[in-house]
Image 1 (cartoon, helix red, strand yellow):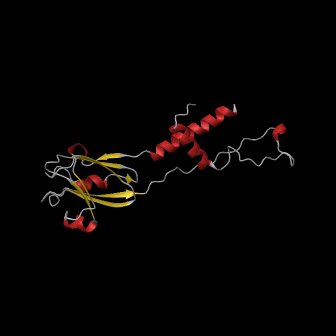
Image 2: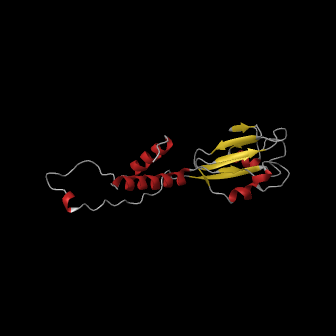
Image 3: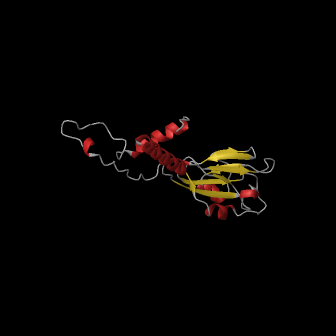
Length: 179
């Protein structure tokens, strides 16, 4: 009976952990992709998204006619692609958002940024774990009531240390532990 209860708790916490830690993948411009012909207002597109640390941006484009350059805010505003922080040119670039803050991208081909092929991404911090719900200790039966001589100092599985328990559940799941 206790094992079944423990498995239920592990299952619930594992599901909670995965629900929060899953990264989102965003195709810049959705089906239109990354292009300069004015089909997409990239800033309007980005303003309706909620980006978090760990999310992935995918730029899809023809690398004969476009590229992606990550630039500073100053270079973004002036459409200056001469000193990029990073340059991508495969035609299908995946960029993982590694920290909170503003990211600035533009196409470095002449005139493309000026016609709107640029996007500012605001990345919000991501909480790694949900706020834990307290788990109440089961009420001991009269035969299990601790006495002054039989008090255990071992931590209870039902203690408020749910963070450690969630990490354990995650590790067991990742390693393929089957319930």
